[in-house]
Each structure stands twice: as C-alpha cells, then as structure tokens.
Length: 609
Image (tube, rainbow, N blue to C red; front, side, top):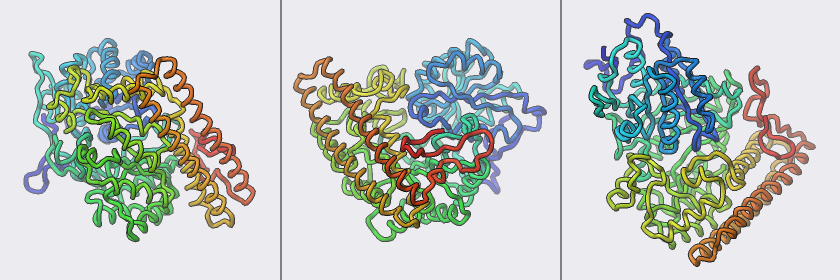
C-alpha cells in the first residue's frame, strides 16, 4: 500500500497532509522508532531538535512507539547499548555537514548491534547529498529528502506492514543490486497548522531547563543567499510554496501551551526570517499579531528571532514595531550581516547594503536588543584587503566578539556557493565523500594561512579542523556570557522600569558596559592586525602562537570577571530598592516538580540551576 501524501483531485491541492494510520495496522505501538540526536556542532549548546520533535509527534499521534535519544560526543558506545534495549525497527538520524563523521561512526555501531533495523537519514545534508550519503555509508539504508513528517509516517507504516520501502516517495534507497535509486519527491506541506505541536522529550529529559525552547512559526525563506541551504526558490527539491507560515493564533497557542505545561518561558523562534514573507507590510503585520497575541494572553515570555537587515529602516513605524516586539518579550536577534564589504555582499547574494547592516546594528542597540550576527570574513574568494576591511567594520560595529573577525565559511551541499566553488576548482577532492564543511581551498594562499592561524587560537582540534564544539575557550564562553548579561539588563528593565531609580541604574551600567565593549572591539582589532602582520611576515613561531592562545584566553576571562563584578554591584543596588531577580528566570517561579527554576544570581555569575 502506498501511504504517501493523499491527494484529493477535487477538493485538495498538492501539499495536503493527512495524518492517518493504515487500517491494516492493528497494533502500531508494536513498531518502535528511535530518533538519534548527535550532539555535534551547535547542538552541543542547545540540543533540542525541532525537526525530530515534529516527526515524533506525528508518529505518536497515530500510535507508534517513539523515543528521542541524545548521543553526546564520546558516549557513542554506551548510547548504542541503551538503543539496543529499546529495540527500534527504524533508527533515524538528522544529517548535517558537521555530523557526517559522527553519523558514520554511530551507524556502524548500530548496524553491528541491530542488524535488522532500518537506518534512515534525513536533514539538510541528506536532502541535498542523499546519493553521496548512500555511496559512502554502507550502514544507512534510506535517505529522506525534504520535510520529514510525511516520509517518516510512510516509512513507519511500510515497516509495520512488512512491505518494502522502495515504493516510498521522497527517498533515496538501494535496489536489489545495490544501486542507489532516487524516488520522486513529495510536495511540501502547505497547511502547517495541521501538524501537531512538536514533542518535547528533550526539554523533559533536561529537567525542563534548557537554555531555550525552539518554536517554528514558518518554513522556508524568500531570500536566496548563496551559502544557505534553507529551502528557497533557487534550491528547491520539493514542489510547492518555498515559504509557508503557521497562523499567528496557532503560534501563540503553542507558546501558551509550553508556558502552562512546563512553566518555561524562554523561546527561540527558528524561522529563517521572522518578518517574512516580504519583510514589509504583510510580514510585519503577521509578527505584530503574534507579539500582540502574546501580550493579550498575559504570557510573560522572552524570545529570540532571526531578521534580515534590509527589512528594517530608521522610521517611526519600524521603531514602533520593535517597541511592540520588545514589550512582548523579544530580547535577542540574529542577523546575517555576513560582511562589511559591498562586493562580498554581492557574492553572497545579500539584498542588504553595508549601510543597511550598520542601521540594524544601531537600531537593535537603541532598543536594548542583543545582536547575534552571522559574519563570514574567511572564504575561498577572500583577499587580505577584504579581511582587513571586514575587521574594520566589526571594530566600528559590535566588534567585541573576536570570533566574528576570524569566522570561516562553512559550506553545505545544495548551495550555490558550493556549485560556484566546484566550477572554479576550489572544492577539495574529497568533499563529495566527506561533506567536510571546510572542504575547500583558498584562491589566495595568504588567506588560507591566516584562516588556519586564527582558528587555532581558541578551542581544540575538533573545532578548528571540523567545526565541532567539544569544549569552550574563553572567547566562546564570553559570547554566551555576553548574551546572559544583555538579557539580564533587558529583563530587569522590562519587569521593573516603573520602580524609581531602576532606569537610572540600568542606564549607568549599560553605558559602562558599552564602553567596555568598545574597548574590547579596539583590542580585538589590534590583536587581529598584529597577528595578520606576524603571519604574513613570517615572525610568528609555534612558541609565540602558544603564548597568544594563553593571552587571548586570559584577556576574555578577565573581562568576564570584570563584568560579573559590576553586575554584582548593580544587583545589590537594585535589591535594595525592591528588585527581585528571581522574577526574570527563564522558568516561572512556580515550577512544577521535575526541574529547578533557572535564576540569575545576585553575584552576577550568569544562569545557574
């Protein structure tokens, strides 16, 4: 039986998704599915995987038995034993470029321990490099393409019925002779409101105390950045609208459900761009409705979003909307700035100008919103001149995070920049086998020397060779700490600005912190340029590099201690005038059993549990 998307030629359009169980399956609970979350790369910092959570919710809604299991780096063998105890009939990985290496290792262990399980990969790398995945990993049976909910439901039913998966749309698989076959794709799901709310196993597994809970209000993107694998018009593998949204009411329903059920109130809206579909009247009306819905329901929450610089202008209307967003809980925005050099913005097919980038940085600062920017100074087409100009832009615009000055391009299958690099002979010969996100060469050998040198100044080999974060240097620690400090300020202001003296004390602390960050930006620039001159001049030997690793680590740790000291002074002063920092915890004070509330300590030491 084909349990693909059911299309009614009279009433239903392609993209309609029926979550239904084949009536021949009498006991769906007897079929077990494991979703395995590999904690590599960014997943180390906040492990919740929303794609997996949606697929698990769909399968559970029709009665299948599902687990979501995290596999920490270095704990693969013990995880496999636990998975074997569950005994899955399907074991599913979400594949990204950064975890290809880990997936191969775990799938080999899995195949040895559970030889009869169907091993399935999906995710961005699977979608755009499914053939290569099957060519290079003999332990993977199926690779799913595109959105996972319809495909995993189809696969689970075929397994439950003992039917071959070869007829399942939207997958790569091997035929009887071992040849890789790609089946016809499925259309994208158009009505996202029809999906159940995602399962929150990982939140519960962490005692309801993750850094934030992820929420998706839309899928796809209307931008077409050359380095990005998010679905858009120029990289579509599925028919249908490239951008789709949940209704504002449905989004606010989920936020309210999470607040009421888990007592949790810090969220990351993971949309490629929050103000899509157009970044203008329609998109901004939609997010204003979400923000107003949060306020109307009395949901005391905090949240992060992604925005695009070109969508925001220094106008009363945009300032008013930012005010509304902040009042509803917005405290952090990720903007793909990417470059302070016009010709590089063209390379990335960015619609924003350098002036647009500077404008949104300034606007976010004026509204007390933390800026987490994407920035790509090191890439195969970079020159020493563009690297220096980018460092100058950062020095003048939020340059206190040294890593932004030293960031390298990560490449992903299915992106136009990979196609360009391949045409220009800049892809490493092994890229198709490894999907190594740094699997390229630089046109300018001097840029390559600089890229490798800066990457070696913090973190370990896992990071600067493969981009996998397994331990943090002080440079990385400062980034996380900096977010905590900024949200501490914004939450105190939002909650207590009506108390006499609070605004004045916060403004004094903000001014001091801004000046400290400006000095850090100048230090980072000088440090960066000194290293650039040393590398290109051949005066940096191994001993000097080791000394600098210690120096930069000590510099950032000293700044963390200094800020903590000032934050402690501020906290004590605020306490004396009636401010209770427990009220700005990420979890509500009346936490249900199963997890301690997260609070910001009076010592200014950041979040503790």
